[in-house]
Length: 139
Ligand code: CMP
Image 1 (spheres, rainbow, N blue to C red):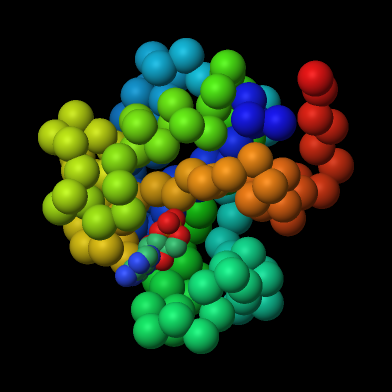
Image 2 (cartoon, rainbow, N blue to C red):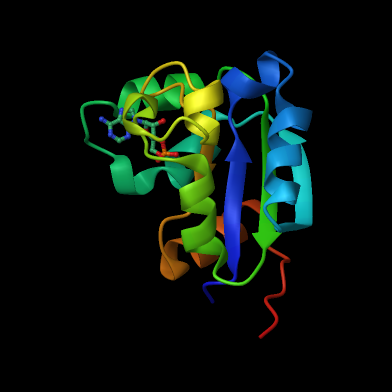
């Protein structure tokens, strides 16, 4: 299911009114927004969403950041969405990423890095269903 991915606009971007600018880039790259909602993660949701990072040195900062404000969550669709979206957003550390990527334009630090995108079909499916439990994947 490499054609669907979960894309989050993180609290650093929503607080700075970058939602529209970021979604414009996404749509210009051919992604179709299949689902969208804005919400503030609570501790329980953030712990569940980031369970694969539990125990890492950046975990507490990550949870504090992700529960600090509102997140826009979307399900994006296009051919080869997972790989294509990761090219558009750039690497986790915005310093290392290419100049035209979303994280380079809007990221501030390795934690406050503007956006999130799923990194594999397995994780995309899990992450999409954590935010949109009713989502139906079509072949
Ligand atoms: P993301 O890839 O969306 O999901 C994990 C997040 O943890 C990552 O973005 C960053 O926001 C945060 N993070 C902070 N420090 C690190 C690090 N050293 N390596 C990876 N992720 C980090």
